[in-house]
Image (cartoon, rainbow, N blue to C red; front, top):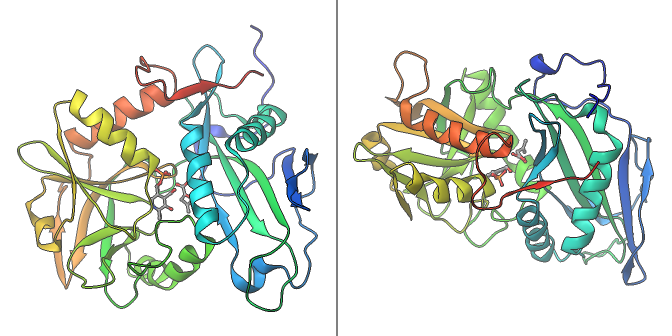
Length: 344
Ligand code: PLP
Ligand code: COI
């Protein structure tokens, strides 16, 4: 197959940042049904001044990645999981969700239309896909909108944390909570990210990569990072990850829980008391943007727990990272059927 011309971008040195692509796709839900959607090169939205997304936070989103395999095939990873999680998030915020088939169609359509922005295999970058669902109907009383916009944009990205698969330092935040136990922490609601910005900015100013939250009820158990799940590895090779009502159910974490036993880990998904952080030999952050980011240290209540002294990822995070990314990039056998080819 002849190589298709790529956009003039330094793919190998991309940050996790927005840059314009050719097209985004938009579907509208009105009068009880979704329309057929349009492709547009506009990067702005015409929005009613009383739209529920801006006044009352009816906004949820997703994040997934599209990769180019060595043979040029275009692959996406576990897209149905993202579609189902968007439906969960939408239900939580009383919004109309795109059906799974529509979600898939929209992602495939936007990936095809922006093919020249799919980073080349081996560049370390990928095409980040951001499906967004917002209430566009006008309301001044607090109640769900009667119109919704489902938009999917793409942008080529590099690693979320500086320099990619390199360790990052976390700090436990106790002055701000991310999500209440009976709140919307397990939905990918835009407001959760606004709620976390004070803590994240404070952590960054203090030289940390990201905030690590404890459970909001007791500040006794660990929850997750601002934009990724957490796992710890014990000396006897247990992959331990928090079970909590207020964390986002990460698709990356779910995948790692499946892959870990293949690599000789025993998986434990349970409440993880903060004191246990000291017992891990390695720890990692996982998510679509974060992939697996090894945790160098966690500072909690003035004490720094150090996992990596030489600034290099440990062997356990490396093994998990290599297995996961090899499947995502089409370099390893996909025995669980997680990758799907997007016909181009
Ligand atoms: N937790 C939060 C708060 C996130 O924003 C993300 C990112 O999507 C994750 C966890 C990881 O989820 P996933 O692996 O499905 O991307
Ligand atoms: C993702 O990993 O896809 C996310 O949504 C994290 C993000 C908020 C940048």
